[in-house]
Length: 350
Image (tube, rainbow, N blue to C red):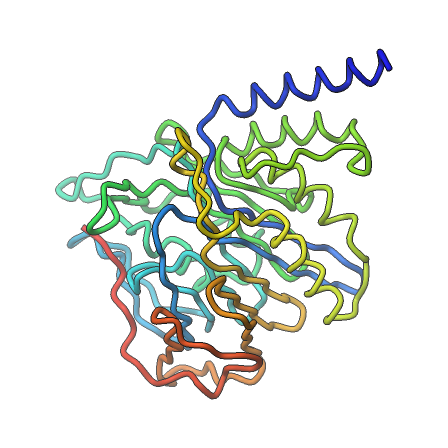
């Protein structure tokens, strides 16, 4: 009994320290199964409605960093499917090589100062994830390039709100490799390792790793923290992503990852007094990176839809296509044929 009590006190002490940082929502997990079965899942949690539409972008698109005359310019090497936020940003997506990019909120983010008059090359944060999807096939390739810091990531307030955009970016590829990119005190910090299967919002990823190290000594079958706070979700996701069936069966692996991200979702309508950033889950994504199938679930509709990128013509010159979901439209199953040719949205910039 004394040993159990000491363990409980230790658990609670770590929890109090972990919770001292104001917690946010969103969780991302990477499943690494047999036969190169790699599946990434994430929740999109936000304090206000954040309507999403799905977009199919072909190769060969000319892009612009949207921060003035010194904006970064590029032509997309790879086609992709992306989920948009308010049709001004790409917070999530997968490209035709199986590279997945996920943006999650991070209050502690501090970006470099950007001066349009100084000649620095800039990229709006709204296009950060899309830039990665457009240009890289693997995490290793992305990390080697982004580490050079050839451009400045530029952020601003979300239009019509008092929310200053502060996010970190996770990327994973079809080999199971992962990296987390954060701006800490104005400097780019990259955590790169295939063992980094789980991330949440706050705290900084280095502190998330410290939390993970502690909880590895406590079997998940005995105790798992159950609140909606980021550190609790991190612990649960870290345990469950490796406890679910290890299989190459696409139905079982995808369903298992969905079960994990649903477990760490914040129920709709939930809010916590004094913790305004603990937010309801708005939508969920699971990306099968081996089979290039992108699954999407809106919590206010009863079905899961998906797009198989192997069935999509992503050749240069193909039209951009959109599946509108932001007005409660309901689709189920393979939704590829429901996408409509549409002009690409413009990333929110300065």
